[in-house]
Image (cartoon, rainbow, N blue to C red; front, side, top):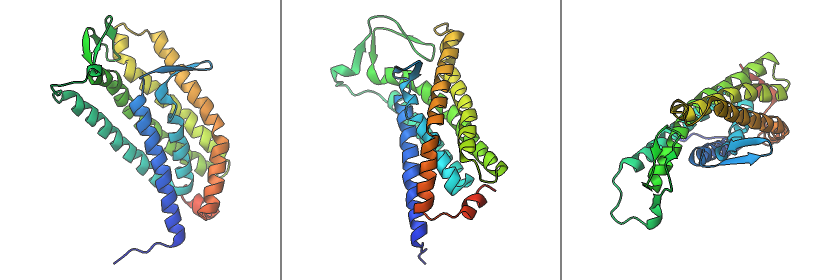
Length: 253
């Protein structure tokens, strides 16, 4: 027996797959590039991995609005599984024995001792992948913890405001959910990533606080700026996918 979908359902499922693909691509990218570099954006000094992060909240808000809480939480759960896959692959690549003939660029000679985010110090010759794993694995793990807390918080608060306002004031649930969830994310990702460095004396509490503040304020600015894009996305997709107001409101309950 073949399940037949009407043309509208097909369009809706295709749109969901595109949104899910954008979400998972952005999340994978932020985990891979993570804290490999800190950049200056105006008054904010942020990790380069922060750049694609606001896209994940934009997409979850669109999915929450048009497809409901269950679909949004499903996507968040898939993203969490992908985080485990990334971390597991990195761990496996680090513990497997290296090939005998390594290209010269895979071995680095450090000019002096280098402190790592996990509190350890390396010096002399070090493998490129081992150094990459040591500097990013903690950030990926921190991102996993922050991700699951912040994204589920975002979805929950989005629908809380949607029920409270009876489906009105999209700007309120878009910004209200993101503002709170970004506090959770910024605090957790910095404290877990650099916690070991703090206890080892390599990072001060003021430096961690500054990184948290910069991360949060940057994400907050982006969240406020993406409100027109949320309205535009909801307007276009609602019209293109033929969602009725009754359908969208029913998904809030």
